[in-house]
Length: 343
Ligand code: X2X
Image (cartoon, rainbow, N blue to C red; front, side, top):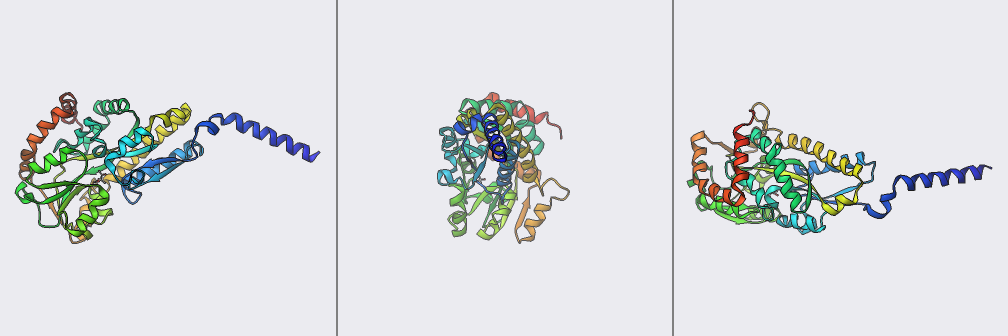
């Protein structure tokens, strides 16, 4: 009698399970691969962790995500990430607009020198119509964009001396990433830019093969760049580097509508939280991150408006040239959104 009851309930449980999860057996992978350049020691990787955890929770474990920082699925070659995502080598990613800009020209918008004066300007673009239009461009390019995050404002550091004018950059070997736009910007400033991946950049700074680099201060600090001779930082806010949460199209289509919605909501929440983490130390009274960096024996140079203007002027021809390549309509719309921002 007991055995019969047990068998009956076991059969009922199995039937219920099969009914509840018809898609699982055929379409769902046991694990999905998320590509990132920076791991959880950085705001970027923290965003990945947040997204993965929220997805697991919201889908009751139907969608499990493993993080691959260091863009390890593509051997560290971050400018190949977008193609790999489209081809399905990568299932999902939180990617930088810089790294995807060789394949998606419009994303060079964010690298236009001195377009974004402050965080409100960044938000006005990413969270407004321009952001929507860029998501449409990404959809057409074959991926499913879900939310915005942020790597941050990229400030310049070097091993030689404080930079206050373009003349201070003259002949300096600066590591840059991604699009040819960076080569144009740093050439216009009189520097000697050289393109390399983040993985190669740190040994190059340590050996003195390059003199300087540009990255957000949160990256500078978490990667301990002062220990690879980067003793001088200039705050020039020349560009902000947003991140985008995306999923490969076939993977997206393999999920139920309810799970897609869960993954999307998780991305939006994680993106919002990640942006707050990325801005930490720079939006509070007195900018505590600057004090922390200076306390490590690093010279932090703040430019006067006139000093900053000399960099803006020197890079204006680059801005004008790339405005055409990105699409004048898109750049005009961004300029307009920035001018109308709430401060
Ligand atoms: O390579 C960089 O500089 C980094 C980590 O900021 C990006 O991936 C854009």
